[in-house]
Each structure stands twice: as structure tokens, then as C-alpha cells.
Length: 357
Image (tube, rainbow, N blue to C red; front, side, top):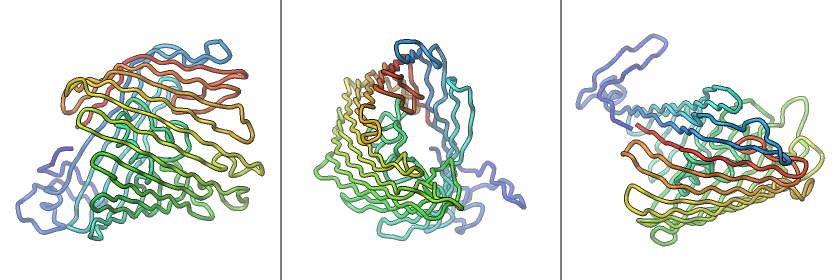
């Protein structure tokens, strides 16, 4: 993101106009806002060929296309040393379903509590997925394990308390439970937490948990089950390579409204190695059992491999091959629904790009 010397368009109900930042301006003034406002953009794009097969037959989404998987517009403003706000949109276009949608992913007021602690009020990042993306490093190529398999949300509406000092970082969130795309009210709120610890230099140990009804408990009906999820990750980061492993276990994530109980678990192993400062190879493998009790034969295997080229400070390009297989049923992932009566396979090859400014 780049520092703005001018607030390009601060539009309020009465209209504040455009202000030029002035050195030494008082906190809360237009000059101060101009000097303490940043504007940024980030896009994930791909051009690829997809083959999606169900029981050996090509099905919908097979073919060539270009997707804008994500487009973020981010505005950060400091009102003074203690109060700030963040506004972030989430845009995506998917040729598979032909939809263009814009959501609010972040819109919160933040209070700096001192000693590394911050309180966010509104829709903000959840404890697990955004932190996990930092360990993985290749979010523009693929969603991380929890996000790819829809066993969690990357942002949600509520209260978020976070902090960190030295080797320790943590976050606790009290949220609606439906995710940032579904801000509906319910009878209760969900809780999510994460604690991370840098064990030694680049070695990171992270654990997390989630409990609630995922925003499904609404009047006049109620929920049948309370969902829980437990997460753990271990990652190592060095100058030329990084590697990590992640695991999750969930109870009743998909059976909140049904009398049946179900569980799921899965793991992900990933790594990358820099051949030179601007070129790196990377790979990843996921294994997930989405319905261990109701459909114990259902399983998903996923892997990707590719080469990343850092074109400039703002642009990353990757040539990637992806493969995903679902046995004994259907399973919805970030790449669409995969599977069949017996099995289904998803393959994709192409170019992925991240552009950020």
C-alpha cells in the first residue's frame, strides 16, 4: 500500500471534500487524516484449462477460461494514536458460474489498547485462516486447507481482540458465525481463538479452536448440534525455503440443523524452495475426510505443484498444475463441487497471478 498525501475521496453524509495533508496537523483534522490514510489494491487472477469429471465423464466447468478469484480494495485511516478504521471490499468473478459479486470483508473500528493489544469492532479477519495464509504464502494459487474445504470463514462480524509480544501472538473473536458474506443475527454468538508461538527463529507452532452454531440458530427454530473445530499447524520459514503441516478436526460442522451427528478431519503439507530471489518452486498435498460418521467412505485428496516468478515488487506469476479427487460421493470445495457416485476428478493447469499496489 502507498501513503496518500491527499485524501482522494472522503465522502460522508454532509460531504467533507478533499483535503491536503499538512505537517503537524491536529489528530482528527482533515490534514491529519490525509497524512495517516493508505489505499491499497490486491487481485488474484488466473487463466487456465479445467477438466472436471464425474464417474469418468466430463461435466460442467470443463474448459478454458479466465477468473478474477479475488479483488480487494483496502482503505486504512488513523484518526489519532488510539483509534483507526479499515474498509476492505472483496470482489470475485468466476467463469464457472458466471457471477460477479462484491462483499464487505473488513469494515471495523479499531482501538489500540497498548502493550500490543487491539480491539476491532465490526467485520474483521478471523483468527485462523488469515494467519494460516501467511504461513502458506501461496494464497493466490489456492485457498488454505480450512478455507478450501469450507470448514471455516476468513472474516466475520463481531468483536475481535488480538495481540502479540515477542514470540507470542494471539486472537479471540466473538462473532455472528455466518461469515462476512452472511451477517444475519442468531440466538447466540460463536467464539474462535488462536495462539501462535515462535519456538525458535523461523519455527512457528500455532493452535486454534472454534465453537458455536455457525449463525444457524434463528427464531422460531433452533439448532440440533453445536459445532466445534480444533486446529494445529507447525511451519518453518527460512531465507530460501518454507515448509509446514496443518491439521483440523471438526464435529457437526455440516449437521448443525439436523439430528444426526457427524465429524470431519484433514491435513495439509506444503513447502517451497527459492531457486533464486525471483524464482521458486512449490508444492502442496491435502487429505480430508469430510463425513467420517455419516459417509465414512467419502474422502478428498488434493495436490498442486508449480513455479513462481516474482516479476516485480507488485506482481507475482505462477505456472501451476492442480489435481483433486473425491471418492464415494460429492464434496464442495473452493474449486466447485467435485465427485460422483463412485468418484470424481478435477484437474487444472494454467497461469496464476497476484497483483498488489
